[in-house]
Image 1 (cartoon, each protein chain N blue to C red):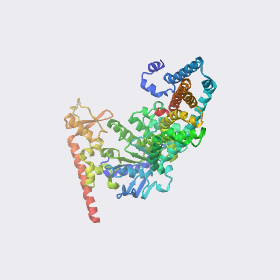
Image 2: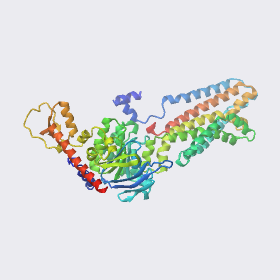
Image 3: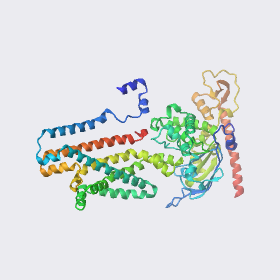
Image 4: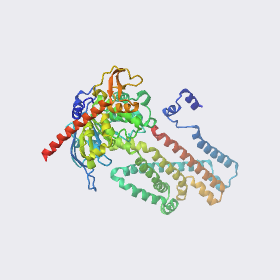
Length: 262
Length: 364
């Protein structure tokens, strides 16, 4: 409705639209959270209605669900911080003239790493170490590649003319990086981070076997006990979390992208 | 332009740096001596031992085929490319001894790709160099408004837009405003109007020439378009492979007496017609005619080039056309006048050529 009013108030509709900042939140953006809320509410309602055996009752207690979800979120955030802290600076470094020759080998090596099945890696690591940090470290190492690759690509895709103009008008190399290259690479770096985040949310349950907790507990308990309620509940919550993380990082990506290139 | 003698017209332009108007800084001379750029792993130098003296307030056009090293030559002036050997001085100061980043802040830079920062507003784009130079906020914003107005963009309408919301022509106006923002004495322009449509290009060229009349910057202008070089340049350096200066002279001189076959080839067909573009009606003695046979014929403005006059004569099928100045008929011009003018130009050129022949003969 407001769009129609705008068009009426300014005959040049295209211009009006361009002058205004595209709003960050639209009605469409509420779909995913609503869907997720519906799923969680439905699941909780279902759990309150069914009679669970003693073995499952503990696992599916609301306190345990909150605890496992919190563990999952904490692990995801930790992985994100580690990945960003390592991949972005390293990616920037690799795009500097002095280290540019490293880009191809690093990406090739990364791709090989990416091709190795993470389940297998977790299994191997899991036979030596247990707990939160090994799992987080393992998944972080695995998630670095999409962010690293997108940082490199994001910086390299900045228009040659724009970089030339920046240098030609007297920006220092650091100035070109901070004022031009990084702001223009943000959408692509953010897209890579989004991929890495979803990957992390999805892979964290596999670390349950290494005593890292999180929502995988529900799934694995369901498998071990041969009980569908626990397994489905765990799977649904993981899916909901993945959807929400994707949604939130999508919003963050939009918010971080400079207005002029949005 | 009214002065028909090619050499004297350049000296007037070159010497007029001191009458720069207003608070704007006029140009300073640039001297390249034995400048060479050789990339490792290549036999031939990209730029081989070029000498070039660019007078204060001149537009010098570097023109030549692709790969002749004209852009490389230009980019060595602000050290985006470091020369392998030779010296470049700006206003008597050796640029190789200066901090390259700080040096570039004192040299305007305009490129074909325009290179506006897409994530910054027009205002922020134009403000960039003053900001790098640490100007205070109020001075910057006054300057930005001033510069946008200078290049014909309404500050209120454009300052807060983003580059993608502007047409190509408008973007390059911003590009020019941005380069001029910190009032540099020198501008480097690499095919600045190469990416816009022909009509916009002509308009931008005309406006830029008008602007330059006031600013009197020293401008190194790279182009591969000889017609643009003729139009814009006080002097043209025709460059061959390795930035060999085949001829460095005023456009009039290059058109009438190209130094060698390479230059002649580059000037191409229709040199005489191009030469007519450099002559204006006010350089001719008009016939005073009381005849009123020119009813229905649009009179030509006295600022028309002889090329336009010839074109109008052919189009109208007449060999005599009326001329007006500020709406008043001031006389007529005939086809015979044009032919006489061309003959005179040729004789002038021949005289110069034979003189040059004597000189070279004397040296040999």
